[in-house]
Figure 1 (spheres, rainbow, N blue to C red):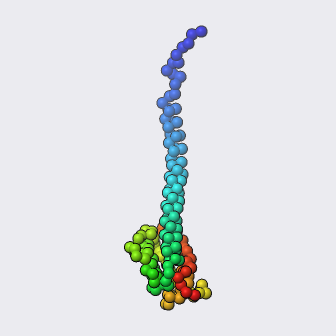
Figure 2 (figure 1 turned 30 degrees about the vertical axis):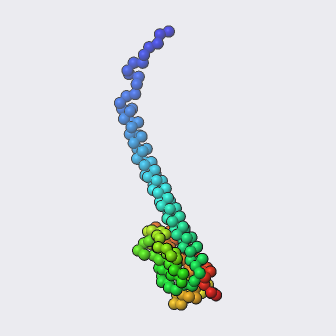
Figure 3 (figure 1 turned 45 degrees about the vertical axis):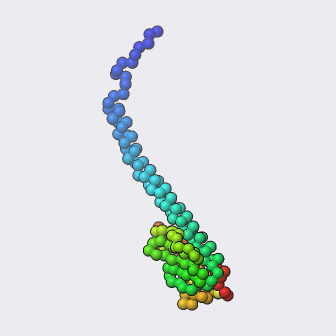
Length: 160
């Protein structure tokens, strides 16, 4: 039994190779938008997760500082609050800043789009922004990249 080499004529033809390349190109063109949209969805989810983590950290730290403050609220606006002990939370530009007693202001969160502080009285419903010393509860709401987070702070230093 002799082994023979395959003749040149039994390989793929140029037409067959081109046909396979055309089919693969069509498949690649059909799946490319799916792969691109999956990548974009991952990037968007990652950005939202990062924004949520940054806002959650900022609101948690501000909440702990304001909750433990020894004095009442002395000044409040829609985007800032100051307590008698020197604690201050304010949105300046698009950065949320926290000042602790005896310390310099430190940035808590950047790229904050919307920020709102509401001071409520003892009943938890009455807005006491005109007489902030009566504030017992703070509602703070912040937005970054379309994500909204809020917190409620019960002031320990406020007298009922």
